[in-house]
Image 1 (cartoon, rainbow, N blue to C red):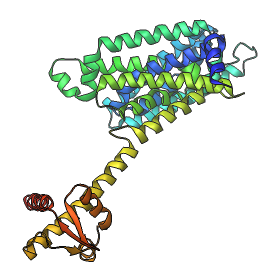
Image 2: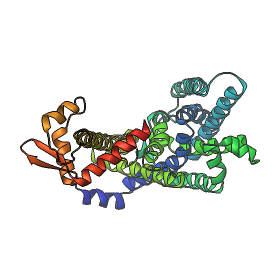
Image 3: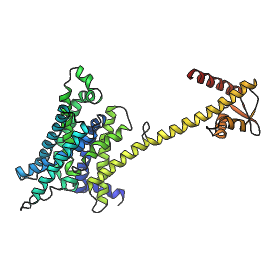
Length: 378
């Protein structure tokens, strides 16, 4: 399908527009709040909360008999929040580490949720149909009322994030300093986790409990590659989340029987991969290029220093030396020919005959500075 046709469908097709807006809302909220989880090295927390929400969905249906998104998301939120409190309680009151507590709560709550879903599906009525879509999500079922619910919950969570920005910043970077300043950091911790629960809950219908943790972690992890500033990181994470949501909706709409939730997760994974490779400061590609440039400069400096040592020993800076001598002195470094070409470009050496190289006055001075700095370091 052509891009223009996709754009037209995005604007005028009700289903695609609703799915794209819902996925974008999910990406913005989960990306912004997930940044704090990434900074606090609590990436598995999103996984634990999302899995803990499943029994809440099932219990909400059993108790009310309603499949309204507000009711089910409320149940998911309560269950996710209780799961978080259980994790915090286990860590604080036992010697069990964070990851072990997360794994324990995740498996127990998720297993309980699966038992409840199985129990509901065996009931003789057909009203339970569709509850299992919360496992992997089904964004195509989003309607306008779901968008309003997601938007309201997401806006409230982002407003609270902005209101408690300073406290969340202290919690993420130096909670002990925050406590010394008189901030109730445990309460702030519970509040931030509660907002993270909201971010996860609004995405369950689109992405599902199994994949939701990716939407919490991936945008923040990608944004962390591009910046060291918290505000910029949160903004980038929200942008990446929205981009993944819209692009996932467009891709799934153009391929028959391709689920939107997993496609959104694949899109955000692609953004993470691009960030890991191409981000200016932390990208693997730029790190490799910088490493190659440093190695090249070290080889050039080594050849210049060798020529300087030869000039000092012979007492004549204009004396030319064969390239074989330089290659012998540079065993283990290599790249003598390329290094000499670099030094010629900089005006530090000149070729006086075939295979004969000598320092220029500028090269002698540069060699002297290089030797002096090496002596100081030694």
